[in-house]
Amino acid sequence: MDFTLSEEQLAFQRTAREFARDEWLPHAPGWDERAEFPVAALRAAAALGFAGIYVRDEFGGSGLSRLDAALIFEELAGACVSTAAYLSIHNMAAWMIDRFGNAEQRGRFLPRLMSMEHFASYCLTEPGSGSDAAALQTSARRHGDHYVLNGAKAFISGGGASDVYVAMVRTGDAGPKGISCLVVEKGSPGLSFGKKERKLGWNTQPTAMVNFDDCRVPVANRLGAEGEGFAIAMMGLDGGRLNIGACSLGGARACCEAARDYMLERRQFGQRLADFQALQFKLADMATELAAARLMLWRAAASLDAGDPDATLHCAMAKRLATDAGFHVCNEALQLHGGYGYLKDFPIERYLRDVRVHQILEGTNEIMRVIIARRLLRQ
Image 1 (spheres, rainbow, N blue to C red):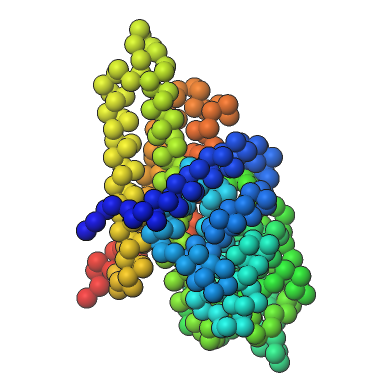
Image 2: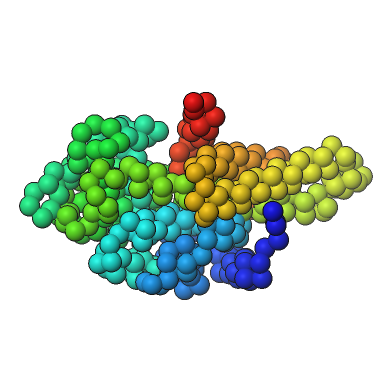
């Protein structure tokens, strides 16, 4: 085991950190306050290759590894967790097209996704099927060279703003083997969107219902064969869980650094907060939790890159640990700031609000425990 990053990894890690610090961080509070989707800022990230980090380079992807992606998303999230998280979803959807699409589909969709001229969303969750994803009901009936879709997807990041929706739909019987994957393009007849949801965090990305009412989608937009959609969705989520874990680490690291600086500056009872051993121990535990979660995340990324048969297990473990630790560290940082941490004049509350949802999406942390336990108890 070698935990030393390569010169190339250190270079793009530094590039991501400097870009996030200079281009995103000064604007992130305003984006959050206005609930603004920062299109230009996302396209600036795409210009650095961050829209298709592990998409092959044939159509403009960066062709990097899942570990490389984890490094990049942690740095971006150190400036704005919400925007980095949307970018991670865009990467996941683009990878699904790159991995499971044919040459024509890849050539048609990927170039504009890599520049973020077009934005992408991932559509699995429905009003009646969240954690029980295989129970989804959105139907797709074959009608000549089109599918006719009816149903709805819930909590879709980019809903209404994205141009491409990678959607899991039911083309066959009940259960996972009856699910297929279609790329639904904005402007398709019968495609509409619900109201923009009002959320605790993640305010820099719009979230809305995606509705299909006799929505016509060409058969040529299907990724893989009929019945392969659930497997495709789950493979996408393995990487998505790493990405969202990395975003939690980035937000938590920013909070940990802010707490350290505050402890060195703030004085109570005639001494700095940094001089109280109880608070020293709290900061030490925060840093240790982050380091442990980061190592597990890197291990899971390496496992996924290597095609390890236990990669799904490792990704579930890493996602559970990183997102729980990320929220805990942000919450502890807020506590160390006292009343100031609760004010919007300080960044802690924004990071706290944004990382909280990471324990829910890409599979709740309870579902991560189900995945882990099933693998441990398999005979």
